[in-house]
Length: 445
Length: 120
Image 1 (tube, rainbow over the protein chains, first blue to last red):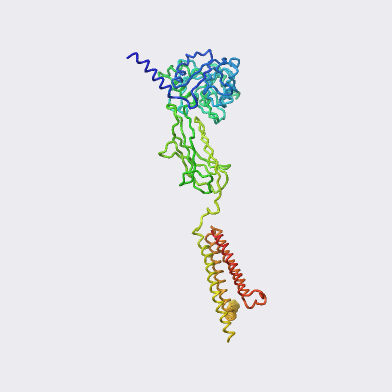
Image 2 (cartoon, rainbow over the protein chains, first blue to last red):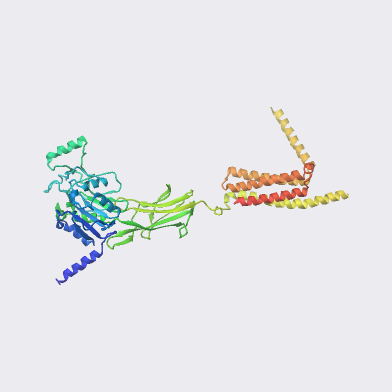
């Protein structure tokens, strides 16, 4: 019996690894600084491997394996766990520019920052993350605990990336303020009583306050500071910035907060699952449009036609690694646009047909080249975009309505004139003969 | 105040009465027949115009066709009347009454063709 257990475990792990996968690929490059031991993050990495990811480790200075080979991204996802490496410590192929190129090619990034000034610090600014000056970690004196004040327990609020409520997580590292970029997805915010300071001694508190008073560097404090933030690029790739790499460490995952195991492990798994496009990935399978009471699309539509537009939306299910119909979007909108949206209406899920959203509307009384535009951009979800061009034409000469009831007096007028003309002609001709006869008879008389 | 008014009204009624009497006595029955048709066309046109103003002009093409048929037919019939009137014989020496009616009929047929094409 005992000898069966390893076999069972192997089977289970096999079945798991054949399950959950990312929607974009399984190969992950982990750029791990040599000073950080791989074993310190074993829970995080093992969780990824159990989810079916194929991890390749590499030091920042290694040349092989290359991130981009022959202008082709070799890995689906890149984890950059080298928060303190200065630029000479990186090989040629990992630069801020190449990381942006990776994102353009659809590779997802998970980047850990630190309080040190590195090339990644300036790259973070390109993602509208405003980092405090180097050497100012997040500090909080609450709640009272036995750890240093720079090791902070942070409550996790439920957001699209973290779907279920988790226990607080341990965090240690740099916070950042958010710039005005709509593509940013805040994942974890600092606790209200925490702040960034270059000293964890209380004697430095006055200096922080003075700096805020002078307005120089500002006051880095409060729950508007981000600790973990996602960035959804327009191309669909995702980049996640984490203020401190210790968030993923085994030490924090097993550390307790007030007697409860910390939420670091499930939180890190959620963050990785969002970053690697497992969760919150939607796509439009198909769109269709047709006139009411018809089934096939028209080449052109006539003004004032009643048109039905429907879209089929799928969501990626990482457990079966399949796209499944998804009817859970309640705020999907359709625009019928010619330069301006002439019609903007909500696309409502069709009951009984999973994944189908449909709306029927009247085409405006305006002809021209219109577009059905579906543009769904929500924080934490990838973007849905679909554009279908249709010409809207005025009615053909024989398509106007006929025999309208308000026009009957005019019809009657025209018809009575014609009948009058016929009767007049008939009487005139007969009368003409009679008169001729009369005149003849008069002449004869 | 009442005196002059009553005299003018009586004078005008006298004028109308003498006009009617003169019309009845001096107009041939054929011209009276044309006049009856003209009256019918005029009333029909007035009714359509009033309906257009008071109720709706919505199928405007239908209004134009109906009203235009009345006006066009009126013009054609009036020209027929002037051509067949014996008083105008001197002016239309070359046009016999038969020729005048043929012109009238052809013009009317063309008019009605356009009217029904436009009526919708």
